[in-house]
Length: 454
Image (cartoon, rainbow, N blue to C red; front, side):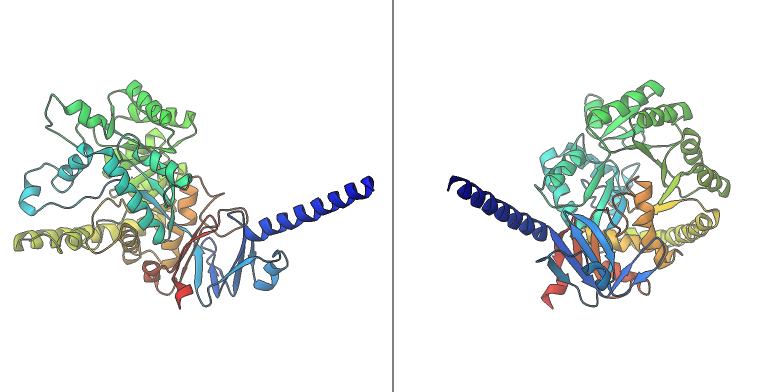
């Protein structure tokens, strides 16, 4: 009897354990069905499409008939009908803890860097807790608009973006996957000048790490390494030397970190190239020879189309009175800027240099969430001459490679995170569909599904 009871108990335990395991397997598995799925790398569209997700990652992609062979019993199914699926979007240059309200015209005239320096100073001296709440809001808004991964490049205080990243990873607040850079490395006087001498150092240290020679550049990188950053951000101007930036790059690479360099003019771009930077942010004045050097060295150009298409006017007009002279001067300047940017985009394509795209989003856009403003800004690349497919590549597969996360994000492929977005129409035919994302999934968890309410 005792042997029989032991056998029955073992059998019951085995059956119970198997049942529990099956329940866990089906509960952690999801099947997503849609009319179409875009592969940004090739431009191919799978129709109809099915994606099997297990434990937050893509297990299989294909037709429904192909995928169903591996679907466990009781799997959760999400049928998106005629929706068009894409990988989660990536903003490779953002500032989630800064929300600049452009000051009135007369106030701007009072400052050397009129539209930026006053709001930036306000952010620096505000409570870090207040900025943390702002960052959490902006992160949630980005995620809801389909941006499942972002790279935050400075302007977040000492530890704002690293702590926001960790809070999101721990599930405390919703938001995209963040690559954090902590404080930006700059030369003295590049962003903020003429501060109260008694407080200048303490104010600057809330936002920046100062470079004053190669050794200080190394020390600055080490301070950010201590903060457990994912990337190093350096702002290059004409006063930054190649030995200084090269020292920062060498120290970052020693710690297995990429270096993103803000460089707009030709001198700063050349400094970044000669120092071995991994990406050049902005790069507006890059020459054809510099683009060729970037191509040969594998340096990414992170296009930032924020100022395109009368951006400043659009964010100021709802809340700031603008004089006719201001409008006229900026209309002329904007037209010239857009023409040069159109030429830059074509020269980048011709050069074969690697490129991705980011928004530099740090501006308050009345009537739009951070995510909506991000999507609208990225579409400027299409107006500047990039095809819809190239725009999508710039914020998916290309961005993933630049971030060195091509094994995790950027495409809907087995082994990658289950980050999916869906729109109602074909974004290749109408790129503005990306402004109307209706389904978002991150790590296999549904963030929003507007299709379900139909």
